[in-house]
Image (cartoon, rainbow, N blue to C red; front, side, top):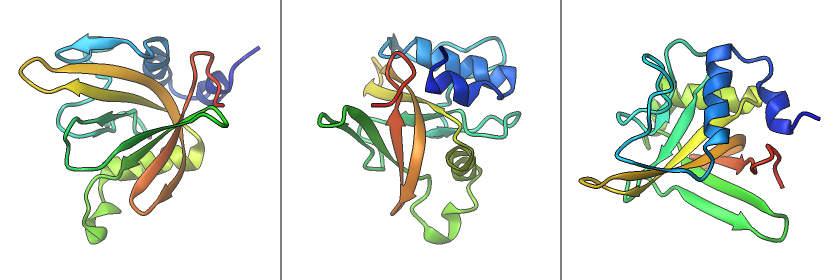
Length: 159
């Protein structure tokens, strides 16, 4: 039987689907330095921005939580219903500019169309940077500048 994650990615472009499967397969893995490239010309995330929206995709692909970054991103574990949630702040605090950022538009499209995103978290800063793949998640809502993301478990389900 297919998981919720599998059902949500089944109609995506192959390149997008394969990269999301990489995030799901590498859930909880840690990488020294930076993430590997998916292949020669397909990145999984970018160092330039916290939200990675590849130009060839309709949707954002991944988000990166930065240690001591400019935004107050949060990971919440709600034991009572076993939902692992991330509050991820949008790009750009300026209200007049935030809705024109292509990265925010890519995440909004993921939220509207129920397309999962890959999630990574910086564990250590330079010079010995280290990142952890949190896995994949689905954006449930946007509120007060934060995207609320439910994280899939290893079986591709939420809660």
